[in-house]
Image (tube, rainbow, N blue to C red; front, side, top):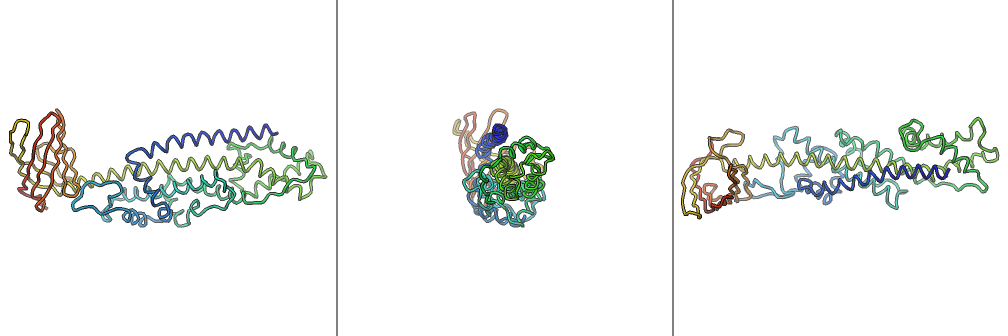
Length: 386
């Protein structure tokens, strides 16, 4: 009997161990990715506020409240500094923001679940950080990747409630070994069978388990001795079996589910943040191109051969075809600093410029990967037609 129980417990712990190994292997990988740096720092800095978000509007408002305003015409953000526009957001981007913050909230809840299960306070009532409020729960449930929160939350609340139940000691001279052997051999612990303890508990809760533990006393072959079948003894046997056999197995089962939920929320947040950043980059490019939009007179002085070249260059309006000329592959503006990168078959050129005089002049330097370097000055000849 003891061997059987230990084997079941070891199997459960092995499953949990594999889950923890996979989760711990993946989490640092997410955190170390450049695109994932901001989401996790946002959760660390604003966990309490994120756990209060319960609507799309609250998610947008919170994100804007955590951003810092940038200089005029800024087209390149630093981390946690980009404030999304509140108007004309596509439904796709709105959904991405909603999913992102819902994923952060679920990540925080899963972390609180896990801490409660593996920590010394596993018998304490569910914390407010672990269990979401009703409004936030309904908001999260609109996100299909995160809907596994509900069964995890239900299971967690059941295990937490049962863990607080005081178990009475076994009576002297008890025959508990036969009682435990019967259930060890009759009911599987860790599979999808309708008769598994995990399935019975998730389907019928504490009452279903307690009802099943009366079966021993009603067995037709009268496995139980009559002198040990008093209601108080039956209750003591059932509670002792729950405390020594079932609760450890349920906690291990629950921990595996929590780890899967947390990993899902992490991955969902990472994917949506990546999508948001792609959109931000597109908006930044549009903003930068709008500020430079028009025709410029371009004067280039090459320090390598002391030659000068004069010409015109046109920056087209966003979302419009460009004239027949080579265009920068990157246009970024931070304050009044302009960065242009040109990619040619032979190499690349980078221009570092300063825009001034009400956006009518550009001054700065260029550096070409093939060796040429020198200065650039630009004068706006015309703006784009509105």
